[in-house]
Image 1 (cartoon, rainbow over the protein chains, first blue to last red):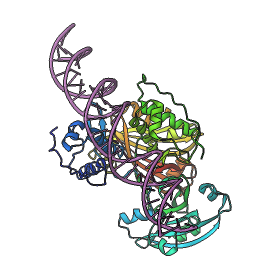
Image 2 (image 1 turned 60 degrees about the vertical axis):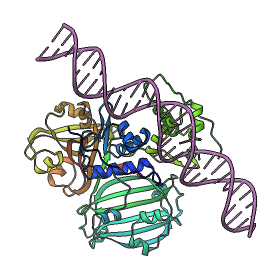
Image 3 (image 1 turned 180 degrees about the vertical axis):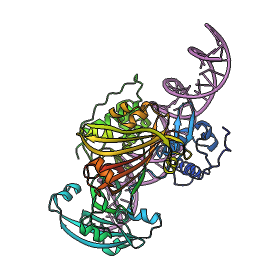
Length: 249
Length: 249
DNA sequence: CGCCGTTGCATGTCCGGACAATCTGACCTA
DNA sequence: TAGGTCAGATTGTCCGGACATGCAACGGCG
């Protein structure tokens, strides 16, 4: 296998961006654009470090981050290869709004309810608050190209975000949460399916009994506190979850 | 917040297990068992390294692996904290068989079909082979406690695994693939829902039109080659996907 | 011709140190 | 008292080196 010409990387030591990050970004871009052919070797770390004027640990840190993303694979005694990949994104904690927007689907939101109420047992357990605590309940209808896609019901602790209905119609809930200075950390999800009730069918323009895709999600911030519990219902005829996952080895 | 008593760690330098890995395992166990209280600080890396007779990079490597798993969180100028966590597992590439077995559901398999056939366009595209190539087609019915749970249809390149029906009835497909020396790397999944056809209903003991949960998955090995394409249908009344995911920051 | 050990290569692990960036809390000042 | 400032603590980044380990290809031997 012929060696490709050595790629150029531009590193700026005066930048506040870490060197390993600059390198990993440029490597990722090179892979994405095919300048680094799938299956090709990356060249050994020692030489690469010497060529770039970096130390080996720094180069290793850059490479490791791409290995963790699933773009590269290391083999002792062989080298580091670019993976032949249909790889896209490894399942982010994304909002439906952002997903639709990225797909060019012109998302829109209609806020159906926006009020505080006493937490039911299920909601209280998910949010980790006593039953009966006042929580904010938001119900929205998500549209794409003017057609209903999903019915979203979210509960969150009161006072957590500035969630006036007008802002909720313009963007996704996650953006508002992040804008409130909350760092999202992880989420626990359950995905299932069920038949539409008459009321659900009417809201989503589906016949009663039509299959619906359901998702329940509790989201936690970086202190481990639950910040949001959502019960979402999607039209199965219009929407499905797509994602990539890596084997943790 | 009171400091907990310094935990004991036993490190074996003569073991072939890397030191950072020994440490990270013991840390994880301590967190799991609550010996490290959620929210508590871990103590600074320098002292910890000195106490354990390790270098700081080694200790950092151990801590970092737990940060990547979502168990710890680091804050510059503050320290490393144990996250209050409902954390369980961050969505593995697992087989339904193993999932059911772990849940004590006594899984069983009935092999319905097991034959080679010419790949249709969809299957060929998923596996990355020319249309019409001979591929192995496996159809199975998965049962739990004797009741049908899912109908699994898988296609894989011929000769990849030793998949005689008897072994398929005893274990999951993924175990056979791994047993064939293949290292699974990643998978691309699509999860949706649809109504049961008459035939599907009969197979799964559901009425026609009942909502079913569908999953399509293409699995790749560490060379980027597709090793398996599966189309699975689950009884929505009996099964749902549950998983945890981390925000990649 | 085929099997097996050797040998070189590339990554894996580990060390010790240095300085920068950031957060917290205490102190000082208006 | 309220505000800003400064110092200490802690992680983040980066360096240079050393040895271990696993893999593959080569070459020798039967």
